[in-house]
Length: 132
Length: 386
Image: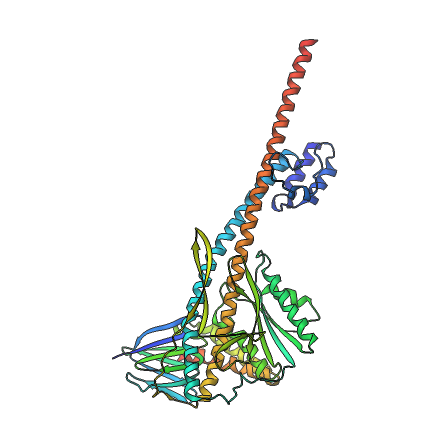
């Protein structure tokens, strides 16, 4: 019995195949999903998704969204998703530094909101590279 | 010495071989050599092309210039034809990109509906769906990056301007977010319009990243209450020859997942419209089909990991992103379609111009040969006579 995972972003399908287990970061903490999980609907935070295929873990950075877990069918809808193999380490590090600098410079409610979001995204991408 | 001046001038003039409308260079040539070449007639006479081939256009120029012009028109024709084919290939890919969007939008809207039914949250307001009295409106204007696409960019800019005037008359101030190099160039020159941000389109096809940039901006503007309403101005892809700039209300979002036009006409997101490039009678045509998505059944035992309010809160940005991306993609498809038709017209014009030039060239050539023959015969007669 395997789980069927579908990760969708607005412009493409990032993942659509069977997996053994996933670990998802939600607003209320990380949840692990094994086959025959109870059906739930949850919001997905900007964080890491870990996928296990036959004792091998794969990491993906998710930029926030929504997940629905049904009868062995997981559908994750996110704004953007990147596999850790697709992220360039240097570029991710640079983006993180730029985001941190922007947050320090931010003035006013609006710029702070934007800068915070950008920082969380950049941090997630760097984390995706570091976790195995 | 006189001949050498003219040839060196011809070789060194850069505009000669490139532009088909370099009338100034030819009049300069006329002042150099007033007796050898006839002055170039005005451009209007070239363009007036009467239907009958025997009623010739008055193209008077030397044989060499005509030959060069014919070559340059031929090159231009090759370029425009290639651009048309490239645009046609890209329209197909643009349509595939829209098709790829569908799984996301379908699932999202389906879940939105079911959660609404399950939770009956009609009376709770989310940050993105708060309806405030409108004092300030943000307009996101989507234009293209490159030119040579007919009236595409102008149509969108004109529509945006109209809307700004309308809102100003009602006493509502406007702020603009311009997407695309053409719009950026235009709005950066205008001082009476307040522009918040200039965004360049990245790469050939819009991706979720670009939509995210716009969404972030719009989100922060709306949530920090700097604006009370966000509208999106883009071109809807109607058909290969027609594209329509439209204005859609982006924020505040309606709870039922409808996308509303400014006039208040709402389209249910479940009945999405799809356009498809097909071939009808051997010509490319666009078919629009309304697809009724099946509302997916949600298991009644579905539990919510978090508060339904939080879950809906997380889904609204997704919906915003997908709307923006859809608008960007439709805009791109219309830009490609109008480039296709503009380049096709340019190719047809080039063919006709080449034909006219060739006729004039042949006439000149034959006149020259006849002249030489007459001279020889006259000379021979004179010799024989004396």
